[in-house]
Amino acid sequence: MPLFDFQCIQCGTVREVLLSGEQPDPTTCTSCGAAVHRLLSAPASLKRMDGFFHKDNPSDAQLASKGLAKYVNRGDGTYEKASGSGPSIMSRDQLPI
Ligand SMILES: [Zn+2]
Image (tube, rainbow, N blue to C red):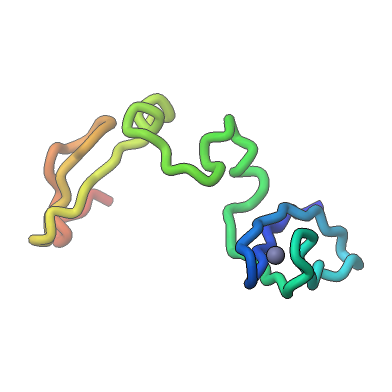
């Protein structure tokens, strides 16, 4: 069953709800009774992976431990490596394929 986040438009409370195909979306906040809306979020399977993608931005060390590299936009069309492995500088016009 898919897992969705719903946020209250009044108090901001976020609630995770498991929904089967026929179940309607919740419409009211369980805390204050105001309307809720569905948040766009990562698929539930990603959220559960080591808690890695859940809510927080992973640290550079966490990214490196997963074999991922992080690049920071320097604002001049180039990207400088902040962590992980790969070229130290990449250009927007010369991205590796
Ligand atoms: Zn509320």
